[in-house]
Length: 387
Image (cartoon, rainbow, N blue to C red; front, side):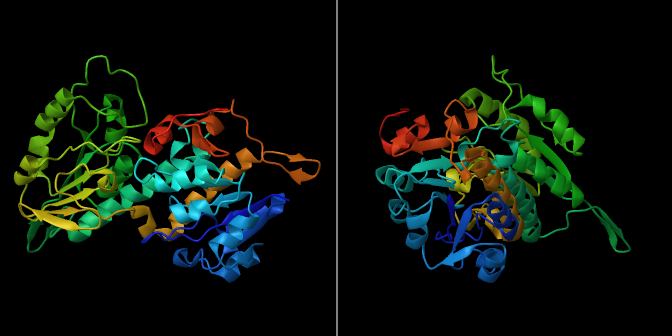
């Protein structure tokens, strides 16, 4: 019988869990044996008893679960100690982020385990249900606006009162991916005037459909290829973008930055000189702070103050909404498991790794200890081996 182990997250501030009663019930219905580390769901309000009722067996610690598991489910990248306990030949399914922290990936390779990295799932129609980057970015965009609204010393909406009229807040959003679009929608629902900018001019229609204004910047010559991923812009583009958005940022009460480039340091989009032009009491939320930050002076886990502007660097915003973040992530992972274990063979669930399949080929960064993904190999200081 194929065994799934749901690990308890060990990283500080990580409140999500990789399986919920809903997905555990689906696993057991398909014939999987499901183990859950004691306390794995507590921070997401899923008690051990609830997970047991769904069909899981509770095990005392990470090592006990790994010793029996064919598939290990996590949210955050593993520590080196955790990855070293993976059973040889088992598959870990979680975020990996080797460029930020290569130790866990290196330990998984040394243990001759496999690593299916959730951030490497291709953004295709077939993989849409597995796209955890999108499901979690949606939450981050929503929560970023709420953080900004809480920190801002004024209302978001237009109000007409007996004491006079209150003008609506002005919000500028850098990056119109999933997080940016949700931020636009949330800020508009709160009544703000919203402007947005992105390296991809084709997103203008999406911004306008949500009631925002798109700040247009002429693209780099030859940059015609559409992509859902942010790409590193040229220095000339960054200069033109800064010129185009500087007046909007100076008039803004809130700026939210969401631009991240997979496997690279986030581009600095809001330099100190731009912050200096903002009004005292304005708020910036930097969603890329863990990747180096889009805002000069932003710090992980800190609300910095520069020129009277509050720069919020709260990391891992999806973990601040643990119930829905866990539900969505757990469903993403369940679809990954269904893809890796598609059919029953001889009345047994069998893991089937077809490396001609673009999802498996793209996201299985490490297979039986051999690094297959180029970016991961670079982070680990090695070369790829796709055999």
